[in-house]
Amino acid sequence: MPIRKALLCTLGPSSLDRRVIRQLSEVGVTSFRINMSHTELPALEREIRLIQSATDVPICLDTEGPQMRTGRVRPGTTVVAGSRVRLVPDAVVGTAATLPLSPPDAIGRLAPDTRVSIDFDSVVLRIDRLRAGAAEATVVTGGEVGTRKAVTAYPSPALPAFSEKDLLAIRSAVAHEISQFALSFCEHPASVNQLREMVGPRSTIMAKIESRKGVRNLGKIAQAADAVIIDRGDLSREVRLEAIPLLQKAIVRKANALGIPVYVATNLLESMVTRRTPTRAEVNDVMNTLLDGADGLVLAAETAIGAHPVEAAKMVVSLLREYEASVEGYRIEDLLGDHPLSERTIDRNPRESL
Image (cartoon, rainbow, N blue to C red; front, side, top):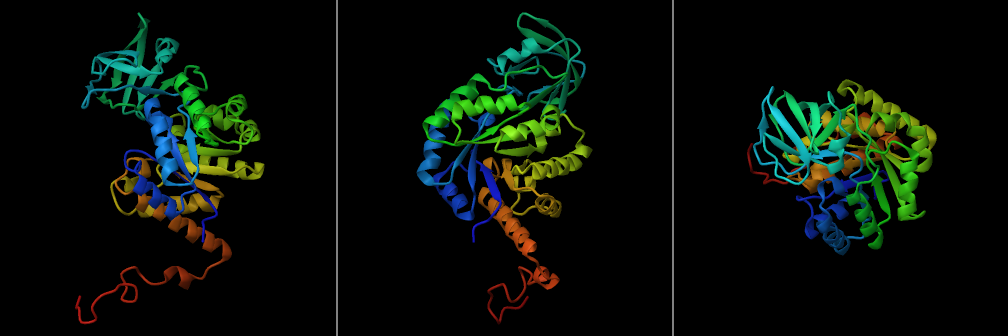
């Protein structure tokens, strides 16, 4: 029986394979997400063709949006508290002395005394001054800097809703008859309307709520979009971590009241990036998210770079089926059932001794 909730799976190095895509399709994935934050334009058309040759499951193009990231950085690059570093447009390989930042025009929008957080406060910088197209900064909190890591500035600079890369990616997606789009860092309904003009009225636009402005403008955004996605990972860059669970519940309740589908993304089964099974806390988190009223779930790292993408999708589908059965009613005995390793559920030689 097909699942009634939506399951979006992000494709990446672990899953951009015809065999894996087919397996995920058979599991019950309802949409395959291409994340433009980690997809280069030259590879986009190739990935679209690969997915479309392997399955009829729809593709969802997720825009890069108005976000800053580090560029390519030399492996093992570490900055030390108190040292100085230059932030430059994304055109060089980063070192401890010079770090590339994208989009290139973001640097000119920074101001002295701005705090810059890299990879969820793994590294924190303070902007001292702008000079010759670069920003000179002091390292407040030292640590390792990686490639394509999320960057947050306080106060946040105003950036266009769509990068040049986004505009080209959207054009390519429309040419390949893709009709699902996720709008990253959506903060105003005008951004939804702008995307609608580019992709046509029959396309589905999912507005991603991942900033304070996005939360505050949720009602207006919901009126313009077809669905909303709570990206609680990026949201936690602007909101206290302790507040994320309650904020998630509040957004889900409001979306339910407005009658718009709401999906939840980020860290659903994070441990399955390396392990074959999730933690008990992750299972509880997913189930409670569904019980709160979420209409769908989005797997990201679990299926994009994880070691067990198919197993992660199977686990979510299993949880979805368990949830759907609970809606129809269940008995405690149904939940207890047989243990996976009980004698009735394991095939072994009767003469075998334990």
